[in-house]
Length: 270
Image 1 (tube, one colour):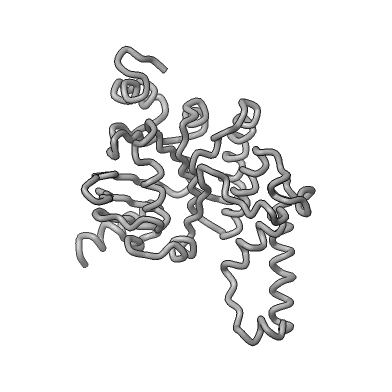
Image 2: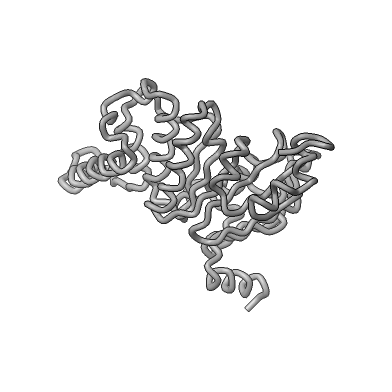
């Protein structure tokens, strides 16, 4: 058994869900991210923070197959994922939201969820053309599943409304619901508090905690809203200029001088 295989096996036995080792990516001559490490245990709530341009979203894009790293490893549930397509990350159990809400805004709330559920269904050409009984049964199952998910997330009363008509905070919740429709084990949230008012941020904090417990997820979020990160995350990784500068519990990060200087300059204080 090779060292890499041994490490992967040990990680699975130890409850390690995700292992990211020395991850990096270059765009032309620019090293956007380098030597990035991340270790997530199942059931935790983790955060990645850093100033604008630190490389956080680039990391998310590598963790979901949008970008292929030029170096390093991504091991999810014991499987090496570098080079896998986006749909393979989804099938493995990785789901994400985006900094800018990406909904089908001219479709209803229910239709947004149904589309996510359809992504995991394979129809034969003849079944689709003739609308076979098996296909109709599957359509009914998808409708029931979508409705049940909306009910769990408090969105069922909006099911026939267009997504564009929802208040911003509910659009964010719908986007999370759509990610949950893929039955993930790891949920990545990219700036979930972006554009929210203080009341919406407070509700979001409650929602994230509840979703993690209710769906049995591991959650990793990127966020600029420091109070939110410090309040809900068990463990925080800090990036600057594409590299990790700190890693630890919220109290450690709050008092880390390198972190404070990266955000606020010398002499700054959270």
